[in-house]
Length: 159
Image (cartoon, rainbow, N blue to C red; front, side, top):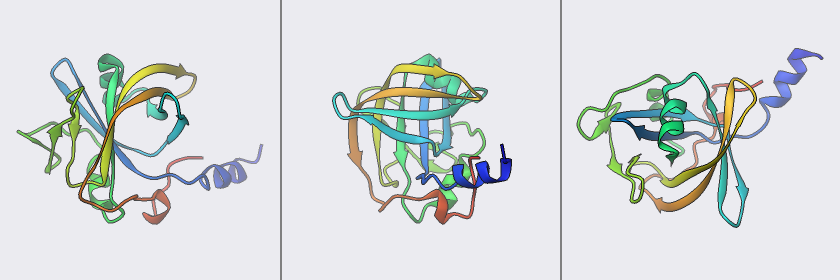
């Protein structure tokens, strides 16, 4: 296989950027993610690729739930804050104010474009990322206009 051609085409798959949050056992995790797709209308399902050796995957797996916070198209700086682990300080993560989601109580960010709250219903464990399948339980809009597209940032993730 031509690795450069493979990388080129896999990076052409369009992705938005999100901040995925979860908490379990008194620990909060938040990560910028991009491998997300809708997988079903009824019930409403999402599939999300999460790096298996991350604190976020550990929290999602323990909690069996998460919130996918949609970044606004002008929130590249916020996306960058969640590339590494951050601990909560009061009601803030990486300086961004959060409130608990309605059902599962994971962090949501009112200043972003909105969020979907999800319960894990399945897991595919085949590579360095697990594909987490989750049912959407709740959805709310936020203050920013989205989405923030990976292609607009100059960053690459994939290939």
